[in-house]
Image (cartoon, rainbow, N blue to C red; front, top):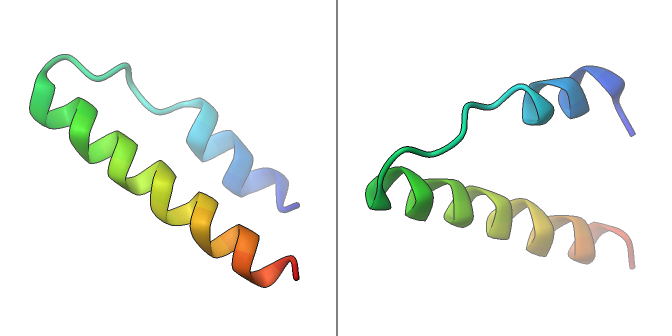
Length: 40
């Protein structure tokens, strides 16, 4: 795992509203599904 990418995720600001929360969840879901695909 690339440490620089992990640091970017750790430093993300806390979502302040519903739109920001949905955006964050969509982004995290995208990366979760793609990482599952590539780990096979």
